[in-house]
Structure formats: C-alpha cells, structure tokens
Amino acid sequence: MSTAANATQPRPEISGLENHLAAWGLPTTEKRLSKRLSSNMEEVRSFYDAMLPRLPEFIEYLNQFPLDAIPKEAHQIAWATLAMCEVDNAVNKWNNITLDTGIDILRMIPKKNFPDRGQQ
Amino acid sequence: MGKVENLALPEIGSHMLGTGKLPVEQYVSQEFFELEKEHIFRKSWLLAGRESDVKAPGDYQNFMVDTLGVSVVIARGKDQKLRAFYNACTHRGSRLVNASTGNVRALVCSFHGWSFNLEGDLINVPDAALFADLDQKQEHLKPIHLDVWGGFIFINLAQKPEWTLREYLKPLDDKFDRYLGNKDWSWSFGWRAKFKANWKLIVDAQIEGYHVDMTHRKTIAGAIPGSSTAAYYFPESIGVPCGVAAYRPEDVSRGMQTPINLLSAKYGATSIYTKPERQFAAEGGEGVLKEDHPLWIFDNYLVFPNIVLFVQKGQILIQRTLPISADECIWEVDFYHTERPTSFGHVFNMEQGVIQIRDVLSEDLYTAEGIHANFKCGAISHVSLNKQEVPLRAYYNRLLSAIEQDQAKEKP
Image (tube, chains in turn brown, orange):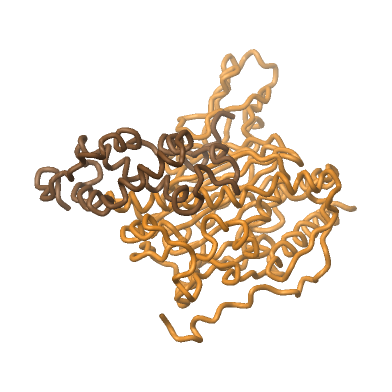
C-alpha cells in the first residue's frame, strides 16, 4: 500500500468539472441522495455524462492512498465519484429522478448499528 | 462455465402443500392477532441481537417486542455470561435502561436508585431501612430465556420454552452456527421503516421468487430471473418452515449491467446482482454455501415467525419485522460482511452495492400497505398461490400449527 508521501499518480486534471464536483461532492450517502432528489434529470444527466469518462482514472488515483490518508484536496473527487452510484439507476434505468415502483426512499431510515431503533 | 448438468437448477417449487386458495383473515383479524401475541410472540425464539454487540462485561442492549409492550435488557455479566431480563425495576416497575445500547457497571433505576448487578441481583436500595420487610434476594430482575446461535442472540418469553434454540432452528444445523458465528462478521449498514400493514405481509414479500421479474423490473430483473429462484419447505421443522435459493441466469448477459455496475464489480463483491470480478472472502462455509453450483448466489431462510435470513459467501443479510399492532409494523434490515473496505475502489463497490440493494428493497416494500388495505376493506378474501410460492403455504401452515399446538398444551 502506498502512502500520500509516495503517491506516484498526480491528482487528475479537473478543469471543466469544478461545478459538478462542487455540487455533487457531498460527504455522505444521505446528502448525495438528497442532492439527487432535489435535482432535475437534465442536471443529473449532465453530471453523469461529464463524470463517466473520468471515473476509472479517478478511482485508480484514489486507490493509491490508504483510506484514512486520502488527501483533503481529493475528497470532493472521491465523494462525487460515489455520487455516480446514486445517479446510476436514475440515468440508466428509470430516466426519472425517483423510482416510481418503490416506497418513498426517505422512509428507509439508515441505521447506526444492529440494535438502533432511534428514539424509543 | 461448468458442464450442463452442473447448471441444472433445483425444482422451482412444489404443489405438495396443496393448491387451494388461502384465506386472508390472519392478516387483518384482531382476534387472530391476539392469538399471535399470546401463542407466537410469547412462545417463539425471537432474534434479538448480535453477540458481538454485547462483547464486554457491562455491555447491554435493549430489545423491544413492541406489541407486547415488552422491553428486554440483554447484558453481559462480569462472568462473561449473557443474560436477558425484563427492563423493569422490581421496586415500582420503572424501565431501567432507555438507550438502545450502552455499558454500565450496574443497572440503576433512575426513579429511586435501586441498583442491580449484571446477574440481575438487587445490590443496593437507598435508605433500605425505610422498607418494613424487604427481602432483597426476592427482588431479582425477572429473567428471560436467552441462547446464542450463529452469533445471534435469541430470547424466548415463555416461562419454559417448548424447544431448545437448536431444536427450533433445525434443519439449520451446527454448520450454520459455525459459519454465521464466525468472529470476522461485522455490521456494515442497515435501514428501518414503519409500515401500515400487517407484519407478515413484509415477510411474505421476501420468501418467494415469483415476484422478481415484475416487482424489480426497474432494478435487477434479469440479473436474478424469477425462473432461477427455487422455493423449498421443511415440513418437519419447528422454526424454519421454508426458504428460497437464488441463482444467476445461465446467460450472464441477462439483466442490465450499467457502466457503473461493471466498474464497481472490478473492486469488490458487494452487489449481489452483478457477477463480481472478485469474490467476498469467507471462511468456514462448508455445508452452508452451495458453492458446488457455479451460479448459486444466496439462500434465504424464514426463521419463524419474523426473520428472513439471507446467507451467501461473505455476506449475511437479516430482515426483521415486528408488529406494533395488527395493522402496523416495524421492519429492519442489517448487513454483515467478513471484510472491511481497504481501498477507495472497494468503498466505491460497497456504495454501489448499498444503493442497489436499497432501491431493490424499496420495491419489495412497495406492495404491503396496498395489500393490507385491500384485505382489510374486504376487497380480497382469499389469495392464490402457485408452486413457486410454496413458502407462503409453509409459513401459513406453521402459523396455524404453532397457535393450535400451544392452545392444546394449555387445555387441562
């Protein structure tokens, strides 16, 4: 495993992607889900189309670092890369922001651990 | 790919449990629900927690059987032994713990300060001399039967459980106990949600493969075709009436694999709907995992009354549904893995897996409330089941037999 100090691959060129990275480079799955739900298909598709050709390069770059040593300036790239998972079905399967054959996704509350039932 | 004979899938189901329609009263009748409370939830082994969450002496966990109003404290004693008690101070009945987990030196009631050690003994009463004839030895916390199998904690509210946990869980045997109890499993993620539907409708949706092609048409249809999910039932079992085995299609190009799916599959195995380029690591699955079949993905078992346990290589998925009333329930799902992500690529794979399964589950959960309303208003009085839905017959039969057998036992 390489470290930040001996990372060989430089940070990928992001010019032209700055707005997408700022909009979608959000730190949690829940925030990225909210972002999808508050976007329209044009915005989602534009993000997806801009990011898709760059994804393998971004992942290979981020893979150089131990997980806890991904440099701060690469966090937005990492989170925007994960946001591609959140928009995948909307773009490739639904052509729609939400899945209209499932329950409202916000009814599924993420748990913190096995016994987590929230406030009783 | 293996030889053709290796690819043969098990029979898709069976008519052995009958072919007639089933009534729906058991989903909507208040009288039936009262029978379930008394003869099912007070008498069955109920999955309550995971042993590794209550690891150190003083660790505790709270488990609720909402519809009975029962709150259970599961605690590890100084002697390392796990015990379960009613979450009830023997002084005036106050709850002893309110958090879902924690670590304590003693269980101290915040009403008047009676305190109990982790073995349940009353060890301190403030101003004890104020009581006329208090015998502290008699004020032990009320115990609840507890046992551990596969690393999971089960409790049983019966005075004397009718079966040991191991008898109850047959045909899931010691091999399952060893595989699921492997110390390497750790909790990865999960969700919970409430539904205005009878608790069994949520379970029903998970124990047959006939729904897959239609229900999941906008997510995974094709990747696990309905025709490659085989149903089975265990007529002799007390607590495991049925199960389903899922296989990938022989034609691996079936199902829509998006560029994101295919990219994520290079880095891990979390998504069960894309053939991964690498597999989960998992030790000790002999006799549990059907790895001799090249297309096998997972088995799911109904652990009566309310658990659907999915077992695959390197991933366990537990769905739990508990009633709040006849018409409302809480559903939870939890995922366990034997490896943690060590690289960003693996995190990416995991994120894809989490989101895919989240969306698939949202489809599985979509029908219960509408079905419940249709049963309740009388629009539907009976349902039709095909041979692939035989687990629902097995579940129904077990529900009735469990109630009847317990009622018969109570008769003088």
